[in-house]
Amino acid sequence: RFDSDLAETCSYYGIGLLPWSVLAGGLLSGKYSQDNNNNKRSRSIEASSNSRFLAYPKYMARWSPSSASPYTLNASEEYANIAYDAGMTPAELAIAFVRTRRFVSDNGSVIVGATTMEQLKENLSPFKENGGGEEVELLGDDVLEAIDEVHLKCRDPSCKL
Image 1 (tube, rainbow, N blue to C red):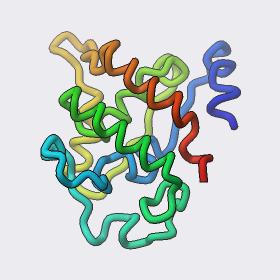
Image 2 (image 1 turned 60 degrees about the horizontal axis):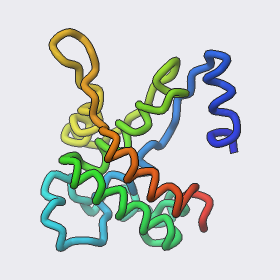
Image 3 (image 1 turned 120 degrees about the vertical axis):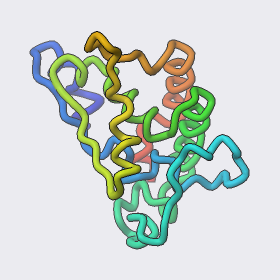
Image 4 (image 1 turned 90 degrees about the horizontal axis):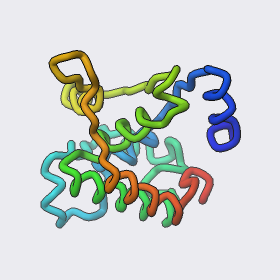
Protein backbone atom coordinates (compact mmCIF):
# COMPACT_ATOMS: atom_id res chain seq x y z
CA ARG A 1 0.00 0.00 0.00
CA PHE A 2 2.62 2.47 -1.15
CA ASP A 3 0.28 5.43 -1.70
CA SER A 4 -1.08 5.48 1.82
CA ASP A 5 2.01 4.32 3.66
CA LEU A 6 5.02 5.85 1.94
CA ALA A 7 3.82 8.93 0.07
CA GLU A 8 4.52 11.29 2.96
CA THR A 9 7.99 9.80 3.44
CA CYS A 10 8.79 10.37 -0.22
CA SER A 11 7.61 13.96 0.09
CA TYR A 12 9.82 14.48 3.14
CA TYR A 13 12.87 13.26 1.20
CA GLY A 14 11.99 15.20 -1.96
CA ILE A 15 11.07 12.12 -3.97
CA GLY A 16 8.21 12.96 -6.31
CA LEU A 17 5.39 10.61 -7.15
CA LEU A 18 3.95 9.95 -10.58
CA PRO A 19 0.50 8.46 -9.96
CA TRP A 20 -0.98 6.25 -12.65
CA SER A 21 -4.64 5.80 -13.51
CA VAL A 22 -5.83 8.85 -11.61
CA LEU A 23 -9.19 8.38 -13.36
CA ALA A 24 -9.46 4.75 -12.15
CA GLY A 25 -9.35 3.41 -15.68
CA GLY A 26 -12.06 5.90 -16.68
CA LEU A 27 -14.53 5.26 -13.85
CA LEU A 28 -13.83 8.71 -12.35
CA SER A 29 -14.40 10.41 -15.70
CA GLY A 30 -18.16 10.37 -15.13
CA LYS A 31 -18.89 8.71 -18.45
CA TYR A 32 -20.06 5.50 -16.79
CA SER A 33 -22.37 7.26 -14.35
CA GLN A 34 -25.60 5.47 -13.50
CA ASP A 35 -27.29 8.80 -12.77
CA ASN A 36 -28.55 9.45 -16.30
CA ASN A 37 -31.21 11.89 -15.08
CA ASN A 38 -28.65 14.33 -13.71
CA ASN A 39 -28.76 17.35 -16.02
CA LYS A 40 -25.48 18.59 -14.50
CA ARG A 41 -23.78 15.84 -16.56
CA SER A 42 -23.96 17.87 -19.76
CA ARG A 43 -20.26 18.79 -19.50
CA SER A 44 -19.11 15.17 -19.16
CA ILE A 45 -17.99 13.12 -22.11
CA GLU A 46 -20.36 10.19 -22.67
CA ALA A 47 -19.18 6.58 -22.89
CA SER A 48 -19.22 5.13 -26.38
CA SER A 49 -19.41 1.49 -27.39
CA ASN A 50 -15.61 1.40 -27.70
CA SER A 51 -15.08 2.88 -24.21
CA ARG A 52 -12.67 0.65 -22.34
CA PHE A 53 -15.03 -0.78 -19.73
CA LEU A 54 -17.76 -1.42 -22.30
CA ALA A 55 -15.47 -2.96 -24.91
CA TYR A 56 -13.50 -4.96 -22.31
CA PRO A 57 -15.76 -5.67 -19.31
CA LYS A 58 -13.02 -7.49 -17.35
CA TYR A 59 -10.50 -4.67 -17.78
CA MET A 60 -9.41 -3.35 -14.37
CA ALA A 61 -12.21 -5.29 -12.66
CA ARG A 62 -11.77 -3.40 -9.40
CA TRP A 63 -12.99 -0.24 -11.14
CA SER A 64 -15.19 -1.63 -13.90
CA PRO A 65 -18.84 -0.54 -13.58
CA SER A 66 -19.88 -4.17 -14.14
CA SER A 67 -17.75 -5.65 -11.34
CA ALA A 68 -16.60 -2.94 -8.92
CA SER A 69 -17.95 -3.00 -5.40
CA PRO A 70 -20.96 -0.90 -4.45
CA TYR A 71 -18.61 1.17 -2.26
CA THR A 72 -16.50 2.04 -5.28
CA LEU A 73 -19.45 2.85 -7.51
CA ASN A 74 -21.15 4.97 -4.84
CA ALA A 75 -17.93 6.89 -4.18
CA SER A 76 -17.54 7.50 -7.90
CA GLU A 77 -21.07 8.91 -8.12
CA GLU A 78 -20.49 11.12 -5.08
CA TYR A 79 -17.22 12.45 -6.50
CA ALA A 80 -19.00 13.17 -9.79
CA ASN A 81 -21.67 15.17 -7.98
CA ILE A 82 -18.99 17.17 -6.13
CA ALA A 83 -17.42 17.97 -9.49
CA TYR A 84 -20.70 19.08 -11.07
CA ASP A 85 -21.53 21.25 -8.05
CA ALA A 86 -18.10 22.88 -8.42
CA GLY A 87 -18.68 23.54 -12.12
CA MET A 88 -16.18 20.90 -13.23
CA THR A 89 -16.31 17.52 -14.89
CA PRO A 90 -15.46 14.47 -12.77
CA ALA A 91 -12.22 14.02 -14.74
CA GLU A 92 -11.19 17.61 -14.04
CA LEU A 93 -11.92 17.15 -10.33
CA ALA A 94 -9.92 13.92 -10.08
CA ILE A 95 -6.88 15.32 -11.86
CA ALA A 96 -7.01 18.63 -10.00
CA PHE A 97 -7.25 16.80 -6.67
CA VAL A 98 -4.23 14.61 -7.40
CA ARG A 99 -2.24 17.67 -8.50
CA THR A 100 -2.91 19.39 -5.17
CA ARG A 101 -1.49 16.57 -3.04
CA ARG A 102 1.83 17.71 -1.62
CA PHE A 103 3.63 14.48 -2.46
CA VAL A 104 2.72 15.05 -6.12
CA SER A 105 2.79 18.84 -6.44
CA ASP A 106 6.19 19.38 -4.81
CA ASN A 107 8.30 17.02 -6.92
CA GLY A 108 6.01 14.84 -9.00
CA SER A 109 3.41 15.09 -11.70
CA VAL A 110 0.25 13.43 -13.00
CA ILE A 111 0.00 11.02 -15.91
CA VAL A 112 -3.05 11.79 -18.04
CA GLY A 113 -4.33 9.73 -20.90
CA ALA A 114 -7.04 10.07 -23.47
CA THR A 115 -8.56 8.29 -26.42
CA THR A 116 -9.99 11.39 -28.09
CA MET A 117 -8.92 15.00 -28.48
CA GLU A 118 -11.98 16.02 -26.44
CA GLN A 119 -10.82 13.83 -23.56
CA LEU A 120 -7.28 15.19 -23.80
CA LYS A 121 -8.54 18.78 -23.57
CA GLU A 122 -10.67 17.87 -20.55
CA ASN A 123 -7.74 16.12 -18.86
CA LEU A 124 -5.39 19.05 -19.44
CA SER A 125 -7.77 21.73 -18.18
CA PRO A 126 -6.67 21.31 -14.51
CA PHE A 127 -3.21 22.49 -15.62
CA LYS A 128 -4.41 26.01 -16.43
CA GLU A 129 -2.25 29.01 -15.66
CA ASN A 130 -3.17 32.64 -15.30
CA GLY A 131 -1.53 35.23 -17.53
CA GLY A 132 1.47 35.51 -15.20
CA GLY A 133 2.42 31.86 -15.40
CA GLU A 134 0.87 30.98 -12.04
CA GLU A 135 -1.51 28.06 -11.77
CA VAL A 136 -5.18 28.79 -11.26
CA GLU A 137 -6.52 27.41 -7.98
CA LEU A 138 -9.22 24.95 -8.96
CA LEU A 139 -10.30 23.42 -5.65
CA GLY A 140 -11.67 25.53 -2.85
CA ASP A 141 -11.88 24.45 0.77
CA ASP A 142 -15.55 23.49 0.37
CA VAL A 143 -14.70 21.11 -2.49
CA LEU A 144 -11.80 19.58 -0.56
CA GLU A 145 -14.05 19.07 2.48
CA ALA A 146 -16.67 17.34 0.33
CA ILE A 147 -13.99 15.07 -1.16
CA ASP A 148 -12.77 14.24 2.36
CA GLU A 149 -16.29 13.26 3.42
CA VAL A 150 -16.55 10.74 0.58
CA HIS A 151 -13.02 9.52 1.24
CA LEU A 152 -13.83 8.79 4.88
CA LYS A 153 -16.71 6.55 3.77
CA CYS A 154 -14.62 4.70 1.19
CA ARG A 155 -10.94 5.13 2.00
CA ASP A 156 -9.55 2.91 -0.77
CA PRO A 157 -12.15 2.11 -3.42
CA SER A 158 -9.82 -0.15 -5.37
CA CYS A 159 -9.48 -2.50 -2.38
CA LYS A 160 -13.18 -2.82 -1.57
CA LEU A 161 -13.95 -5.72 -3.91
